[in-house]
Amino acid sequence: MTSTTPAVGRIRAKDRVLPHPPYRLPVLGDVWDLHVTDSSQWGMRGAQKYGDIYERNIFGARVTYVSSPDLLREINDDDKWAKFLGIPIRDLRSVARDGLFTAHNSEPNWAKAHAILAPSFTAAAMRGYHATMRDCVGELIEHWDGRGTEWIDIPSDTNKVALEVIGRTGFGYSFDSFERTDAHPIVAAMLRALTYINRSAYSHPLLERTLFRAQRTQHLADVEFVNSEVDAVIAQRQREGTGGHEDLLERMLTATDPETGQRLDSQNIRHQILTFLAAGHETSAGVMAFALHYLSVNPEIAERARAEIAHIWTGDELEFEQVAKLRYVRRIVDESLRLWPTAPGYFRKANADTMLGGKYPFEKGEWVFIVLLQLHRHTLWGDDPERFDPDRFLPERVRARHPELYRPFGVGMRACIGRQFAYHEIVLVLATILRNYDLTPDPDYRLKVKETITLKPDQLRLKVSRRA
Image 1 (cartoon, rainbow, N blue to C red):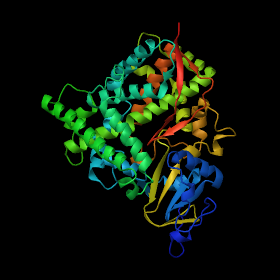
Image 2 (tube, rainbow, N blue to C red):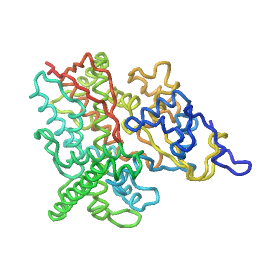
Image 3 (cartoon, helix red, strand yellow):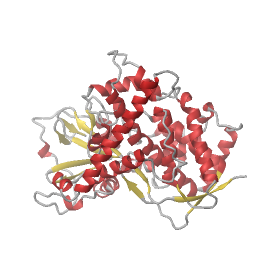
Image 4 (tube, rainbow, N blue to C red):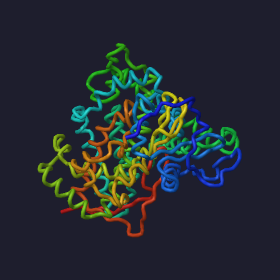
């Protein structure tokens, strides 16, 4: 176990020497080694080349990448390090401002919103959302039944079901995802905004105002549009009056912070709804899509899951209490998140001058990026970390595992508040699909991963056929 070692003399960042790409240039640094469109995967490949801690220097800015479980014992300690809004999450604030995911630690609305919303994301609270989630996946099944033998665009359809789930459980809104032949205007604007944020994150403001001026103008218009649309949803609920709604919007309008007695204002409620849309549905949809890919190419795993589903799901509907009993399906979700955590990393900054691991000096406020894609492929996972094996998450193996080896939901007080919600939703969706369909992969497809703010399979398509 590592520990933060007090410095003998002053800690200076300039004394930190780390592996880095070769051929570093004056002023420009390692800019030739910068990959913008697949930055998370490039961070993983860098870790595989240069080790568990390394750096890139981009125009004088030092970016430190960490995938060492032992170093994470320190970095994940909230007393020593804290959440940092790195690129591109910082730029997501143009959409979600001080929402739960994008708020700075010092912003008062984060603590207030967390206290108000936390009870809505407990395991027990899932009971109130279960029927709505079940209705949404029922619409997916009906949609697929009408597709015959067509190839199904899996990321598109998992996006639809996840969007309906968060829309209806979040603020009583249906995007009519399975009726529309085009993207809902809010969804189209949000997708363009996320794509722009990911693309422009490492760009220079001058380039955005000149070469990418049209994209920037569109982005600003998209943000203004989604703000006005969400404000209209909130205003409509306020006109109707509260009561009779079992969704997150109802709680945000009526509940008070137990410490201050204050409610969330309408503007912050908008930021929370946009957070759910930007971060909530995209991540869940990506996990579903990755899981369906692995189930399609590992039919023995799919059959084992179906056996568990048949044993637990004995009636017409999958009941709330039965979802938690689908332990093998849950392990499929965890293994999908291990290989492709849809939020592929997180940033942490030092609370004080520190000597990380007793040898790497970091000054107060300096930050690191946790490369989850490599952490989740660390040698501690075994000889073949790329193999899809849900039994890595058997209880006895989890207990024997290094405590920092698996972190798909982040850490500490800023860990994902919607973890239980996501697990319940994804297990329910996968169980329903596996019970109803056999999955046939495209024999020519090789997994490609697309990066926006989150990860998802690119151009993944499957054929689904009704089971007898």
